[in-house]
Image (cartoon, rainbow, N blue to C red; front, side):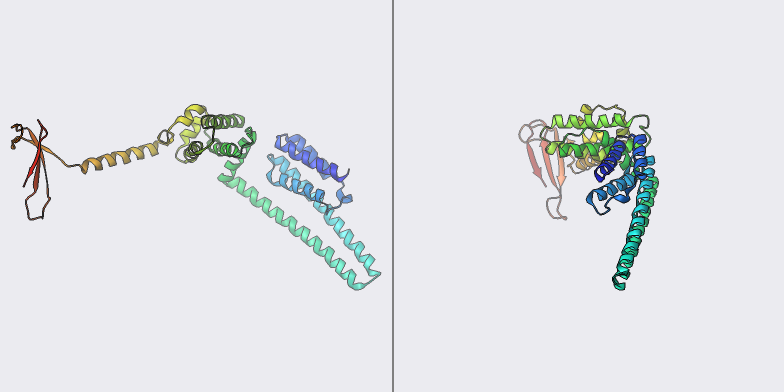
Amino acid sequence: MNIEELLGLVEKAVKEDENENEERAVEILLQLESTPIDAFDFTSAKFAACGKLISTLRKKAKSEAVKRKAKECKDAWTKIIVAKSTRSGTDSKTTTTTTTTTTTTTAAADASKSNENIEEKKKKEEKEEEKEKTTTENGEGTAIEQVQRTIASKVERTNNATRDRSREVIAYGLALAHCEGKCEDISITSLARIVEEVEDAMSGKWKDLGKEYKAKLRQLAFNMKDPKNPDLRRAIAKREIDATTLIDLSSEELGSDERRAANQSIREHAEAEAVRGQRKEASTTAFKCGKCGQRACTFYQLQTRSADEPMTTFVTCVNCENRWKFC
C-alpha cells in the first residue's frame, strides 16, 4: 500500500461515518490499525493529513464505536512512530560514533527529545479527549449542539450562505424541542424536513432575503430559543403549525403565554395612565349659554394663576358647543 492508497482509505472511513454507516467505518479503521505504516515518510504532507483525519474521527465521529476504534488506530500508529524514531536515533548514534562523540550525543538527545514530544502530545490529546467526553456527558449545551448538527446534516443545502445559515438557526430551535423530551417520538429526518419547509416558506415570501426575511428569522429564533416557550417548539416539531402559518404569525402570537400576559398587563397599565392624565369634565345646569340660551353644559376647572387665586372654570355648551371661561 502506498501513501495515496492509505489517504484514500482514511477518507473513506470519514465518509462512511458521515453516512452513519458505523459497521463499515469500524471495519476500515480496523484495517488501518493493522497497516504497517513504518515504511511511510512520517514528515510528508499526505501522512500528516491521514493523522489529522484520524484525530477528527477520534473526537467528532457520530458513532461512539467509531470514536473508540479511531483512538485505537491513533494509539497503534503512535507506537509505530515512536519505535521508528527510537530506531532512527539508535542508528544515528551508531553512525556518528565512528565520526565524533559530540555528534553522537546530539543525535541521541534529539531522538530522546522527539520521543518525549510524541509522548507528551499523546498525553495532551488523551486529556483533551477526556475533557470533551465529560463535557458531552454533563453539558446540556453540547448535547443540544450535537442534535443540531445531526439535524443540519440531513437538511438539504441551498448553496446560499444566508439561507443555509437560517436553516441552522431553525434547526437549533427544533434541537431544543428534541432535547426537552417533547418530541422524542419524531425522527431527526422529519425535523430536518420541517427546517427546510419553514425556510422555503420564508425565502418564497421574501425572495430578496432582505430586511423582512432577516427580521422574521430573528423573531423566530428569539421565540424558539425562549426557555419559557416550549409549547411553540413542540407545536412546530409536531406540525401543529404549518410553515406558511408560522411565518405569518406576529411576535405577540409567537410569544409564550407568560409573555402575552405580561404584554397585556403593560397595555392595561398604559391605558389607565392615559385615562388618568385626561381632564375630567362634569355636567351641570348651573350655567346658561349666552349663544343659544340652553343650560345643558359641561365644565372643568384648572389652576391657571397663582395658588392663592381661585381656579379658572371652563364651560362648554352641550347644545351648540359654545365655550367660555370665568374665574
